Length: 267
Image (cartoon, rainbow, N blue to C red):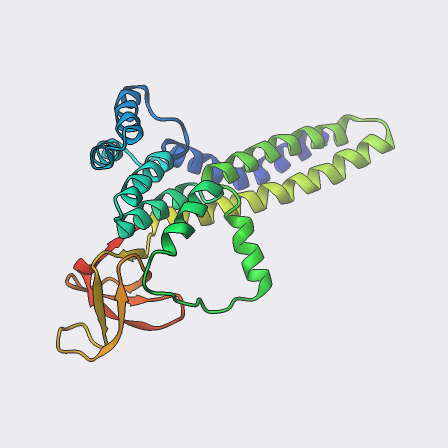
């Protein structure tokens, strides 16, 4: 009976942990160190940055990103553009770095610093405090961080279930039962958070205004009424990308309008 219970329980929970394992495989390249063949290129880019040759450093970091996304490279590329005074491209690359590594305090600090240099000071729509807390919790780790947390909690849960089933002492049975229950909750929550982070990476809707200024229109054509003006470095959310030349966007305060697709670059 105990063996049957273990088999059923393991199969039930394994279905919960499998998505986390898939996420680790899919996104590990973004979280791990650079491949060995790229370390020479990064050293050259770092040397150019240290020598204050920021245009060359930006070029070399951009070349590295052709081999695959990496938060550290996006971060360094953002720094290179910031040093050149190209705030829009600095913000774009800080945003991309933060998307891959949302818990990194250095990336977040530099992003906020770059945003102080932008023209548009948009006040975001207010959120309930528990919504802010939830988002902060989800962003406290990357997709791989949550996935590894889920796998680790799953393994601990199996060990605690084994303790509950095989121990002859009441105290150990209680530790095993309640410990396994807690680890099941952690496994479930970590998988949910990992899935949400994965969705943010795979379905990117945010963009950065790259032109000096652009008029946001009421309709997707040049003759539409000007609703408001946005300037370079401002973050927008693309809500309708069905047209090639125009995109419907929303800004943080809730305003919506259309702007030319060439005026923005997706994060």
